[in-house]
Length: 147
Image (cartoon, rainbow, N blue to C red; front, side, top):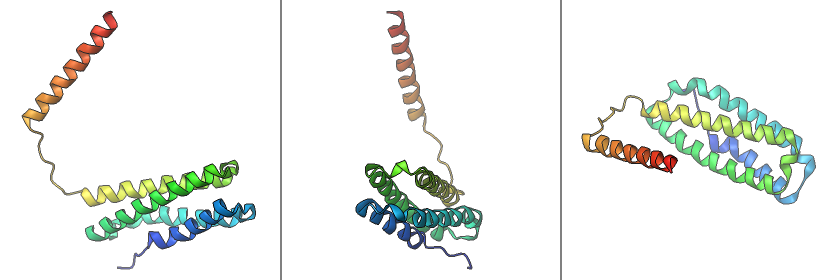
């Protein structure tokens, strides 16, 4: 297969530099970090169109990688926020867009990974239980509004 991408490797460069900036407060590093994030975004957006070329095990493995990178990006975003680096509007926008691209890739991977799995019918007991809970909640809201 021609399509290979190690999300962790690509994200690691951004993660290291972002941690460096948030810890050492090196303001001059913003442009280099923004450039790396932009490249990462382009890779993610291009990758969305080639997921169909992957096998189910590759999709599952990539999904785990993406989830790990999302957690790391959220942590870095919090660190940058605490260090007041969200004052740099370009960095803030790029970081948020990179997270959006990661979530989009994760959802596409999830759909690709779970397509074809048969859907089990919902049992009558569960349906009746949900209906009873809904009725009780509705009656509670109605009685609350009457008083």
